[in-house]
Length: 456
Image 1 (cartoon, rainbow, N blue to C red):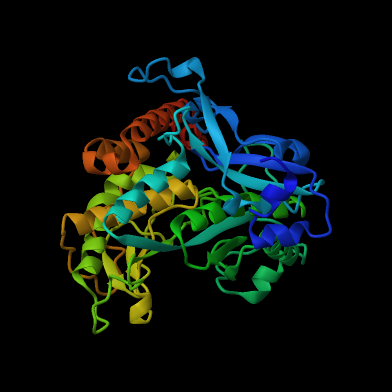
Image 2 (cartoon, rainbow, N blue to C red):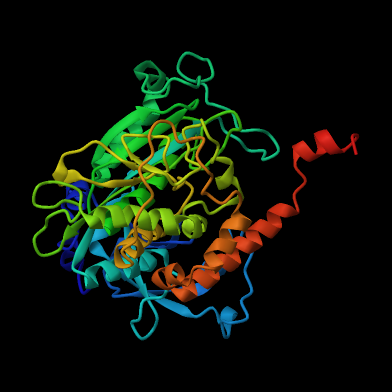
């Protein structure tokens, strides 16, 4: 990049409109780590305009959520901290409207020194899975739903998380799903979310009050899998920044409060024929095809092994409680929210499959990749699903592994899924999750102190 004018013309329209009449001061060169948070470098815009690429250590992908590092014997010179090459993906550029300086964020592509994509990078994992679809002449279309909580500031992890104080001066109440007055309780936060999203060029489909106290759901327009994963990645930071402006936290934990529902990232999928642009889940008469049922069967077959990717922490499994609007099974049905796999009411052209198992705590690139991988394997292996469920499915046999430990064992036994996600990525990911689980096992919980201290 020889001049700022050269790369300014590569920016999306929303980014150009945001900068119109403003002097760009800083550029954040970012990638997603395994947890889904931003890592990278910030620099003056004038310096960015003179660079073609930059470097970042690969050691960030050996870290757990606690900051510990995994040790993997099968990786030679693991801690040589080799450089990864970062090159800007200008299509991803967007504003950081909460920043004090006029700032752009740009997600970067990540390769090794020879230009080969590095497997451990979550965005590359999704690209790898999409490559399988491309080879078949298929193009996935996805639509994520984001659930999260606005909570009172919590600076002491020994204290339980509590709902925020709303504009009435009272704690926000639960069981007010779809209530307009409930969402008005924290209207200023929602206003900032809208304003930030508009500045970043993101289109919000709907915002609703969910069933939990301070729980909100944002639905995004369907589209390209990488683009939507980028948006969820950006939205998580956007929402947290909006909340901090109003003396509350935004959390994407799967189960932040014991007596409230958990937060999911429901993923809607349809698959297009890349040449015709038509939905391969429909036949010429608008009826479901074998590909449609095979995709469902793939989810029923492979989601148990994929659970570590879509429920990545020990807390994730606290969400899977029947009658708390969370699935514990992998039954499927039309218009039935008690099943893990739902077929929403739609026109034939919009026929799609909804994965209701994924938690909002998963990395969007990894979660969407795993979900698409399960469906792909169902279509490639021509699997047949179980009969659709009728009525409430909460009493159906549990398909979801009960803990992260059990889920990792299922992933160990599924070579097909590990190959699709990337063998090296899967190896590093599993090692990190086992270390997190071991660290969690060292913590003595209040339940243990309350019931075991004097009763054993």
